[in-house]
Length: 208
Image (cartoon, rainbow, N blue to C red; front, side, top):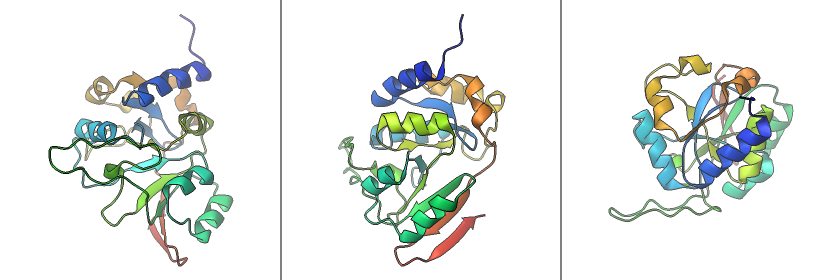
């Protein structure tokens, strides 16, 4: 059987993401579990699969700063400077995420494309977003046209998989689509920098 090309893989992954499903995919850092970051029900599936408390926020991928600007109240100028000079995977934690409200008990949260899912955002209203350096990820997010969840493909507390072979069977069985492993060639296998930025220009290095 001929190997699928990147365009075919992206089209298949998009169909799953738009239907509220989960994908297993290589990022510019490690292998990740992804879903539509505007769909709270899909995000809840990610927490359940990872057996991770939903009180913890998630890292998201955006295709560019224009996409970031649609989901953040104000992009601090320092963030623009950091993105322009960046030469390695970097996650910026922005204040003022534009997100939906947590539903009352018994109510179902709606997916709204112009709002981040409430369960992707930290309690202080901040959200971590990375613009991937890897062509596959950037193209996937651009075609999705909204942010993509990017959390490491492991059970909570376990090792983050740098290559496909390190991903547990439980995680593989728990997603709806697995991206072709050959695409991991664009991944660094390294954790990203994490930098928190404030509107007043204050910067906090969380992980160098």
